[in-house]
Image (cartoon, rainbow, N blue to C red; front, side, top):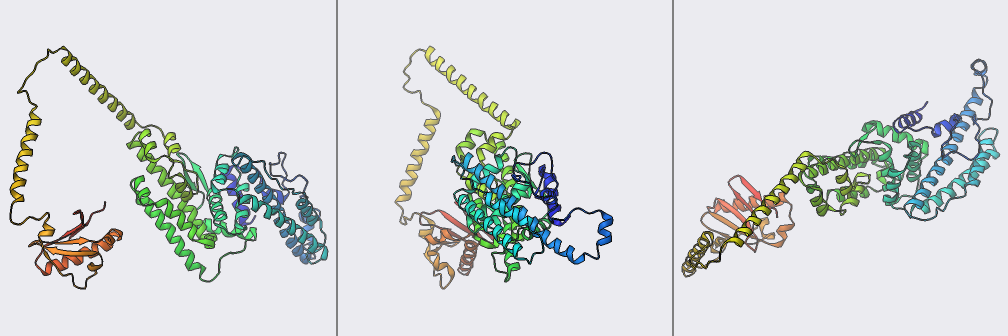
Length: 520
């Protein structure tokens, strides 16, 4: 058993796969054939020779070494041909299911009779692989499989990634690993486009991970092990690299590092709102799209599967946290379905916030919070009713000097403030802010001139009036400019600096070693 067969067995154990392409190639027929089985029988011994006993093989082994090598080569290509036709059949079934269930159209099924005949003729060819008969049978089979693949590709281009995700995730019984391998092979060897890349990403993520409790997933293999399995799959699929071999290692390492950064960023998030405000999910999807054909390198595919799983699990944790803090109705009003598509694209899985929230159990804290709110509302209603009843029973009285004490206090404060304002407004120097009272400061040749329209100083503080370009700067650049402003202030004797916009809002300030940037 080779590495590819080992992978099939492991995936079958994980996903309860009953029969695989390996079984068909070995001739391991079972009583109950899967839905993807052929409509005609394929010989169990694809080499065309009768099964020999161990003693016969030992006796004739050396005499037939050359013939054995030739049979092995022919056997390899025949196995690959059987696997390719089987894969196309399974892709056909999946696309037909999507057309029927999600696109609400009659499946445009392909007439695969000629392809099956070509496979049958190819398997029946006697002699070595150099004969004219073998070459003709191989060419005819290749022509038929290419035609079938082309038609499937045209149908697939009309289907969205969401269509594929929903079909695979909701299929009952679940799609086997054999079917997922067929889809992965189909998208890997199809003409490159963002659509096929995204579909390949979803299928590979589903193939190498498994659903666990709480809408989360776990990886079936470690990163290095995944890379090895993906390379083996490519070799068995006869996949041609779409990317240049030049410095591919450096490029793939850079992309892998980018995925690791995304995982780290998600891991640091404490609330779901943090990820939404930073457009995190949209950036992850755009990062995948930007990889282009380099996405298909085994290292990048493995990193993507890892990223999808970790980010998806973090999303579930953050949504659960939101559910503990707020009730379902408020969260439904707040989020709705606005972010579902971005999140699903970023995680390689259909994730809908409201559906996930509804499926989470209501915790005791949420229940007690609801009860408290109900009790508070009941108490308020009772007080209002009692007050109304008292007013209804009390006789009418006109009291000229009956005044609310809080209203009286507010009135006194307003009168006092008006008097102080009138006195201050008649002083010799009438300016609206300390920044305007200050004297002008020359910024010289510093970088501040590009982001500050003017600077003024008081005996203790330098005030810098920012331009609109300040708002576009990252926090680190803002801190650097504030640091420069503090240096200028220290030369003229000021101990602090404040950056304010034209509306008087403080954008940043510094005092001593402390620098603070205010975010809206």
